[in-house]
Image (cartoon, rainbow over all chains, first blue to last red):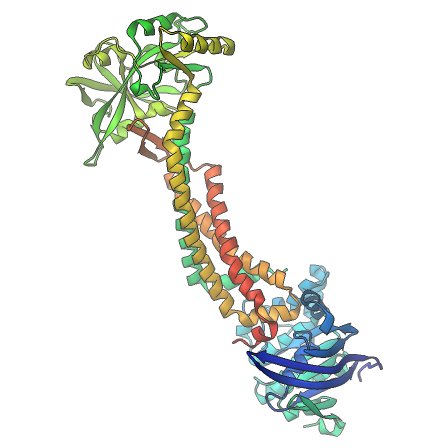
Length: 240
Length: 387
């Protein structure tokens, strides 16, 4: 299974997130506290507007809390500048989006190589990592295909290859199966499970789909910006 | 860095918009190069006219040859001044010249213009080093013959080889065509000094005297002597100074107008480039968000979008430069300070092309900057939500 250690990878402490529009203040997260250990595979569930995507964005360093602190891999994200956050994301976070978010004018290979261009790796080293990542997701034979030449499931697999190419500590997935049919969705979930169990990646996944949540090790439920449940998933529930 | 192929392929996806923008920029660059090429051509016409060793002697207070008159006996005295160079036959390089204008019809157009006719002596040719007869022969004094510059022969009726033109009711026949290295002489028709003044019924009249004094000390001494002589009432100028003055009076206004036109055209083209890039940014919000999420900094995204704009404008600039190739060396005409026709060849040298490309890149840089700033101002989270 995962090579977890006891140091938390993610520590969310007393986090509030508010949005202001004119004189109205909308509080999306209330005093959130959360810890994730290395090797965790966590699903975030809750109705629309419950704050799950906001929490995911805070943990991924895409947004900052109004108050409180978010530590990820030892970095205090609330106190990190935008440019330092960008660099930090490139090293520590892999992203999987609902709509895949591949660059349409780049091939599968070039899409996966994109985050690697931010590393000091040489072209030949990058090539090796891109090939490995694409082979892990089963697309070693589709490297030169553009996103439009791939099915939705294949596009999402390229997106996963891009997320793991830099070997990040944390993978954040925002509804990774939300735009896929059941079969493709299942393949993606299997792949994510492998990333967690075989490669020890810490994964946080926002989902509406209970079947997807059942693949995780831990389920967090949010309601109105508050954490209402935090439970371990029983292994027996996995098989469907 | 975001790979440039991302930008180039994005441009090719929107190829219709990209192509139209490239064409718009090419037209602006073409028009600007044409204007700069014209100024360069006019500058060349005057620059190549002045020789450092040569002096031009005119009546004191005259600003150009046309308004100068020198008394015949004074002009004769100048033939024997000390320090004047001689040609290969040992003849002094001094030429008395009479300059007048005639009204001529433009070929193929219902329009007329003032054409300079110069009464010349033998030394007039040697005093213009690039002078050469390229068709026909040189004129024979005493038989009312003319030679015309090739450019004037092309532009004016009566100036072609074998054609006859009337000067003050006297027929003159064109027996030869000449070139003079693009200098001011190429805007002229030449007659023999005596034939021309006889036809004008002012025999012996002289407008200017040109002479070559290679020794600088002697040249400066001669200038002082001519200027200082109360009886002569003449002014002596190095040719370079004389043509420099003419050049500035002819082309300064033109330059100002040209730069103003180029400026406004460039502003217009910047809007075209900007518009294209605004559309690109608007339609690629999610891509921008993704790039930022992956870790590309705001500055990198800014540079990427500015580069994309520069690629469009670079292509537009190159196309604009290419469009001028068939026009290089084309002859044009404009009115000089003496209200006579000044011909010039459009000159699209490296300097002019570089000016065109600088304009194109300025369009790309400024036109792309504001859309790129808009791209990086997007919040990553909001950009990722765009469709």
